[in-house]
Image 1 (cartoon, rainbow, N blue to C red):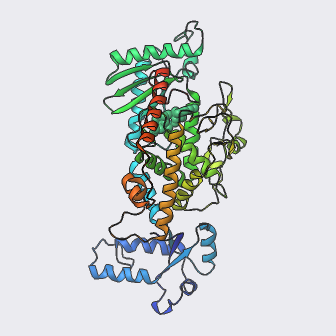
Image 2 (cartoon, helix red, strand yellow):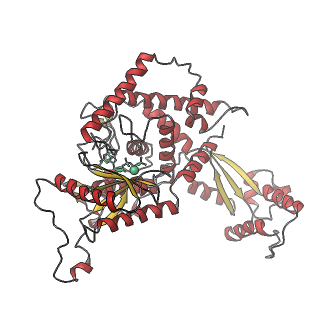
Image 3 (tube, rainbow, N blue to C red):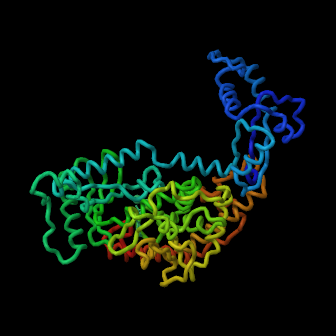
Length: 502
Ligand code: GTP
Ligand code: MG
């Protein structure tokens, strides 16, 4: 398997002679020149001969060979520990001579995690299509509520969306009448009026009901419209044929929009976060820990919270706590929604990057170990404080809703689903541990493949675990179905399960 830690490849200027290259530090010490010129020279070496000529003559095979060999001779490879600070290390090395170019090698698993992210994340086109779809739905909704806004939230915008994920949208009526254009448009500002209703929830249901009808009868390309109004968070679900998205439209859901912003910030402050979340989401899907059908399983949203919590617990922490992000907030960040304090800093640039330099491979293994041994029966996961707390209620898995702190976002998860998660986490930690020791043979799968292919994971695990007796498997299945159908009957259908949740 890949080497642990990172290696640094340092390139030196042309003048380093083969004869002088006896020891890496010697190579460094004997090299004059400046960083900028050396970098330019390196870049040119790919397009033209290293003579510095600007012509675009194609190089002979022998020339490429010669240049590559020379390049290799003035390059050093340094193995360095995992936790090294790249900046400090480079500063230290530069004392011995200028460094013209460098890059850090990471492990093969690190590369695989980044490739997974790159392949599955939403593309620019897909993201645009999501905003466009919202805009088209906004046009329909504007028939009733002129100047309303339909905004995407959830994984379409929080940085953790995988191609094919649903499109969560939120009909925003709060901004109506606030724009300057309106204030100056005359005396007739009333655009709609919600007549006296018993509660805000009933108003939400009425609004979604008319929009649902409208989309069903007249919404271009909107098919399979379902009104799921009795859910905890009422919604209208439909397929948008032209874009191919499965859409969930809600209203009066500003807190969810704020959680999307918070996740976006966490995903953006450190490049390892998104890669790790994507991998854990893929791992969970591959092992049927998550499902597109609502039920007693863990959701992607809960998994993301678990990863964030885990990264807050590293030493030094990779991610700050929500309470800390709140202390950084200034007046314009202040945000109270329905009495809940949703304030945190919105300017990412003011969040200091972490000093932690752990590799993704290490973090992946540690994630599985952390949750494979977590005291789920006693403790609650809390990203606001970044430390576990006593569980306030008896649900098998307790993840505190970051803004509505009395709520548990994973209340739907059954004991058997949690146990499955724990068993798989332990097994995956074990597999990664073995990978560290064994070098894969050519006919063996290695790296992420051992974790993401369920059958392979089993055969690789060597654990010779006894298959659970049929009675236990049937019991688990019934338990999942029962909890899922209870929720469904309570809430009609409902994804954001609608149910139980916070
Ligand atoms: P995928 O759709 O699975 O890719 O992820 P997602 O994050 O979009 O999840 P989902 O569509 O289920 O929910 C959309 C958003 O609603 C989430 O990102 C959260 O902001 C919010 N949400 C989902 N589930 C819950 C919950 O149980 N409690 C609360 N408070 N918010 C939730
Ligand atoms: Mg979603």
